[in-house]
Amino acid sequence: MRKNLTRAQRIKTKSSQRRESKKAELKQEILRAATELFLEHGYEKFSLRQVAEEIGYSPTTIYLHFKNKEELLFMTALEGFKEFGRALKIGYESTADPLERIFAIGKAYVDFGLEHPVHYRLMFMQENDIIYKKLPDCEGSIIDSFGILQKTIEEAIAAEVIECKDAQLFSALMWSRVHGIVSLAINVPKVDKNMAYEMLEINRQMMKKALES
View 1 (cartoon, rainbow, N blue to C red):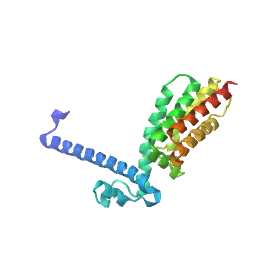
View 2: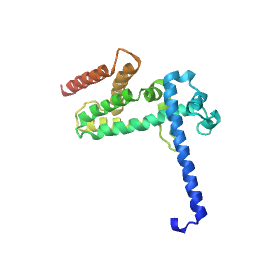
View 3: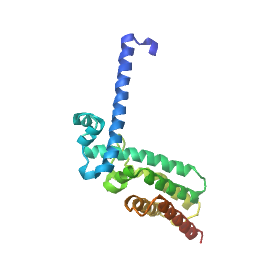
């Protein structure tokens, strides 16, 4: 196919590819800067002008990629959700045992929150409705990222390792527990990572004991 292109067409194609590559690189640079500045200034004081100054571009350049700060922060959170989804999937695939899968996903959740506190704040602690927003170019919403958790619960119910028949309710319970641990670790100075993991282990032992009794 490439051999059939004229020299001018090949140059035009290469030029277009370079522009798209630079555009993608700039967008990632904007998202990186937004993450750092959100950590420094918080939601209310965060602005696109700050992002422009951070990366050495004019505010107009930022507006070519994002229409306002809400969209930029949403896309920053979306980057976090991509990594979050991958982390939960790795936790799911780490074991075939239905009960241990629940614990593995719980640990993956806490790992993500502690390793990506800025994204976690944007995802779960800043805009309460962000997880229900529709994703670009699809019908689903961010809340669908939790499908793997509910799937794991459904498998555990089918395997009769947990008695609760409402997978959605049990998923919400599990979410509330790990979210509580991460939120404390992020917001309360006295709750460091070691304490967060100790709480997670205590929760695992209590849950396992309750299910096995």
